[in-house]
Amino acid sequence: MTQASGTAGSGREDALQGGTWWIAPTPFAADGSVDGDAMERAVRTAVGWGVDGVTVLGVMGEVTSLSDAERDVVLGAVSRGAGEVPFAVGCSSASAPLVAERAARAQEHGAVAAMVAAPPLVRDADTVVAFFDAVGRRSPLPVLLQDEPVATGVQLAVSTLVEALERSGAVAIKLEDAPTPPKITKLLAKVPDLTVYGGLGGVSAYAELSRGAAGTMTGFAYPEVLRAVRLALADGDRAHAARVFDAFLPLIAFEGQPGYGLAIRKEVLRRRGALTSGAMRGPVPSAGLDAVTTAELDEVLARVGLDPSSERFDVDAFLGAEVAA
Image (cartoon, rainbow, N blue to C red; front, side, top):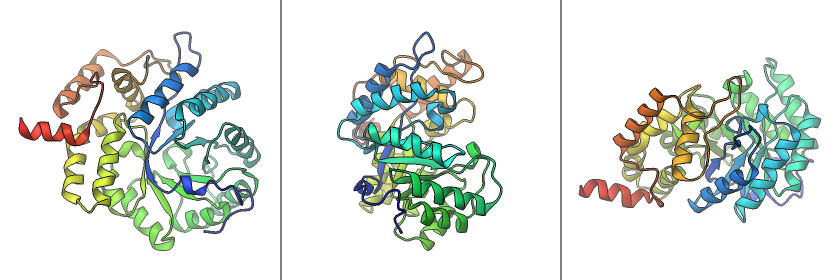
């Protein structure tokens, strides 16, 4: 794809060639402040799980509730926690200059890409394309284009996406316009060398990867599962990939519930030791799940046979033990 002037010569494009990327939530302390130490620990823990990259300050990071100073706390923490693992940063805004400003701050902390969605509620395709053109010219980081109509209210046709990708010089796309598999097929037919990441909690990961997605970029609390699915498909072992995916689909779906998903995910991550608290922000700040949802989570974990308190989790070893039992 054509490289936009804003990202030319960055030398960072190779970092976004696929893999299993984990989207980190933003941890909050008891007083409601962003907990930088907890963020660093969470990222370091995920790196230990074998993720190929980390993304922060997206929708799952409750980014609309964070101040600029709090964004800097998150950036510093992920920079320390990620080590040699690359990380991307959500820089979305309705203003291309503000996107560029956020991308510059992310670059200072070592980010490899700026994740950018369409400006909210824009209905005109020409305006969307012009926005991404401006982003591409201004951003000091390579652009990871995010197609997320639920958060933005903007439905992007494949033809519009192709032009936006070209004009922004985007090196990859995070595709979250359900149903994602057919859109992946249409996009790759137009842009065969495009790096596509699936999202939406991984609920369609098997189909997305089968259709040609290069990886996943979600906050699912067991990224090892999505990694195992990806590697099995890359090896041509569709049966094993399907078996892994099917085994954990109840938890993937349960985590993906609109409205409850983030709280559920934070609780699972807390139980796995990646977070110390499930506290959230938003219109109604929450310290965790209600009793009924907690009981449902316990039931789902029991159904798939997972014990989040276990120190290590190996997908193949776990499935082998299940078969032996």
